[in-house]
Length: 188
Figure (spheres, rainbow, N blue to C red):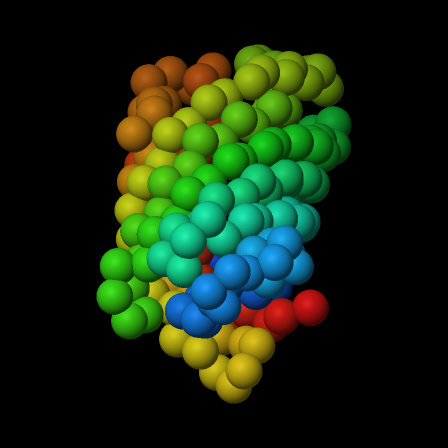
């Protein structure tokens, strides 16, 4: 369990995200180019249990100087090393989100995530199953600019749709209702 916790923490800190949204001022009548921001994320984790790679590009629209909405797509590849025969999975997801700047570097964040999740059959004999999961997550974060188009962010979300594993045949995409994301942003 300690190794798994360490892996989760390290994979969280290995996340590198790119985005152009923060506490910038908008002109009185902003054009479309000023309202749209793009970005994404990349995550990776490598351990003796599994290797994990995630890519998640996003596009957003600044509705007002304090309110933004957008859409993020996600792809995750996981190669599990403890299964025999070998097991690798591919997950696909989409997350529309809203983000509201409260004051200074603090913001509120809400998102709906649909994840098409692949997991091993139980008992495992080489087969895989695929299932769709919906999650509603909300929380808050902190964005600290570093230069003109870069910054550090930390985000803590609560997954209101979280389901706890009750049997060994249950598989869910999240091991906890708390979802933490941290990273460095850099504008395109």
